[in-house]
Length: 484
Image 1 (cartoon, rainbow, N blue to C red):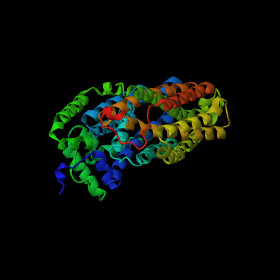
Image 2: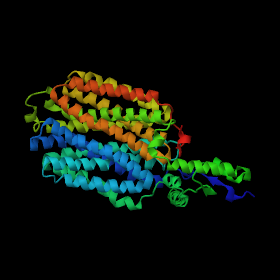
Image 3: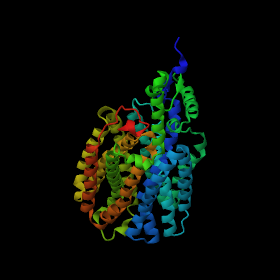
Image 4: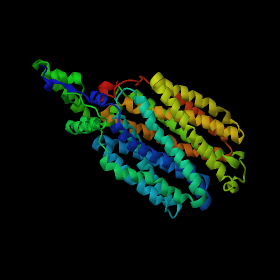
């Protein structure tokens, strides 16, 4: 009879055995709420800048700074929360981010002046920088088959957040003002804080820290919730084939020991050094370009919607006086273009596991470029809204696929840090974007603004073409040697 004590299984084999069920559904709900919270706070940028400008008599540059400081905070937060999550666990990252985002978001509603609002929104941005960790955390619970489709479903929570915020602004702003909108938009962060204590830590993170007993306990609870059974034998931190060698012969003991020393040394290596290692540096730099261009163009389309809506698209010198009369047009335009992300999600889900991550992004960049192109000249309001709807549909879809691809290319030991730095680079694009969308489009330079956005789309598409490998159908790597 076979000695079961010699059977070992990896984390990927355990996840495949328990499948996708109620356990992952609970993880999806929490991670999804994290993205709803981030999306709502980001969509606020389409509304409160204009409202505060009118109330406090701000200049265009002061208005755009309200958006820019949020991206600046996210730049700091994306890197910081990535390090925290890779060093101390995903849950601790969520806890700190929820406290900062919710607290600063609520306090910003009571800002007595412009300076205090800018400072508090910067702190909100730092908290929002943890958004990419929700992606990595959920990804680490999903079995390899159909991983792309489940990540698309997860990404739909971002769309839910943008649509909900647009609807909330439509209802709240005209009746209660921008302060109440800030209060209500901070509530999802407090819900995340309340439920932080009951969510599981990532078993993949625990295995990387050699805390396999804790990882096993979480997987056992997951198997129970999914009404499945874990494989027989012992859960191991590294691949099954490597550890089966431990029982093969005593002659392999030295090689196994050397392998373990290599892994231990690798775990002590600086995360930044790993993502800049020869095997990852090309991917890292191309991801930076992709995220910068994609973030720039995505938020550019959102901000263009508010800048080109209603009377402002006529570039009238009296546009400031028209703001109150065309608020309904602004809310409708932003709400309609927010709905564009729904067909984008459907398209992404349909093709991402069929044609792969790279080809999916390339197709949608091309279509987004084509739809945005007519806006280099002024169009009537209906056509402008339709073109922005289509462009946002495809550019948001590329954003979704990019958020799947980035965590897949980095190994577990540096996943949150690598994606965090990449996201931070993307936030630089978000910082610059309001200056272009508000400054140029609002200053009768729509053609220049659209040309800049189109250029960023082309550069993003070029980065996709140059990516060295496809991740469709591949298991997540735990170490850099396995990811190349």
